[in-house]
Amino acid sequence: MELRHLRYFLAVAEELHFNRAAQRLHMQQPPLSHQIRQLEKELGVELFRRTTRSVALTEAGRALLHQARSILALVEESPEVALRASQGMTGRLAVGFTGSTTYALLPVVAGAFRRNFPDAVLQVEGEMLSPAQVESLLSGRLDVCFGWIRPAEPELETRVLRRERLAVVLPEDHRLAGRESVRLADLAEDPFVTYPGHWGSTMYQLTIRACRDSGFSPRIVQEVSQTATLVSLVAAGFGVAVAPASVRHLTVTGAVHRPLESPVVKSELVVAWRRDSELPLLRRFLTVADAELRDPGAD
Image (cartoon, rainbow, N blue to C red; front, top):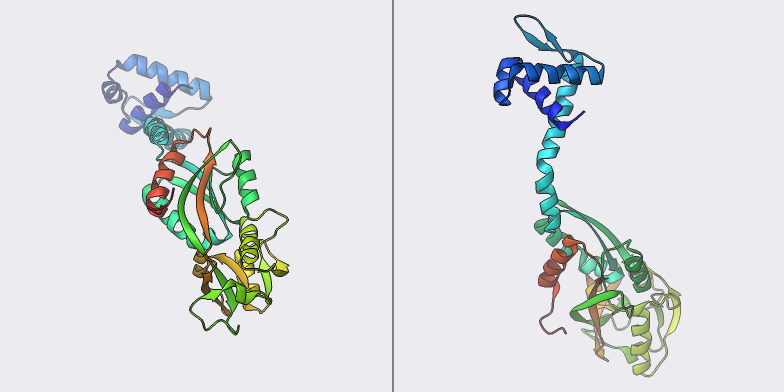
């Protein structure tokens, strides 16, 4: 069956008159009748019930009519769909977020995506550790990631969007919870809840470095991979934690967030993607993300 056969069939089915259908198709009636008979022979069914006075659809004809309209509509739309895809307006984009960016950035990024690409599909994976993000980008499972590290892999390209100060998360009954800001050195005797060090977490490394710069090594009692779990364990009294200031967007009863007074430690929020990506939607998305999130002071 060829598309022209469907167009011939659709014209006759809508006109229910071979002469009018032939005029509509700018052809003679006998060739049209021949094409319809050829189509019926190919399908092995009768599509029209013909008399000297009328033409009517058979049950098979009525079933084919619905399909023919759908198929021809898709064919007509295909060039526009292909054009929009080439322009980066449709398609699917897989985006990954580290734990803290899941709560601070995901709503902003997803909202901007919905507004700018209403015909595209956003696939989101949150609460990721930095090494998992790198692996997912390299494997092609994710197209772009937001996190706190600049990957060293030459296959990946990165851009700094902003710099964010680190803060501390304290149980609400902690002795320092009433302060407006906290010196990290004042937490030297406290137990710490951290992201996992053995998985190469960026925030774990920043926590260790900040504590050492304050003159102590943290006593780690619990390592967790998810930010929600980290804040929940702090709320439960397991210890204190260091996290990006944006973690304040994750509200857990029993936990409070306080800025670090000293040392002032900043982490770079980075967007990363594969250098060889040819996905048009990704390029448009990066422009939108840059406009939504970039700090004018970032490199």
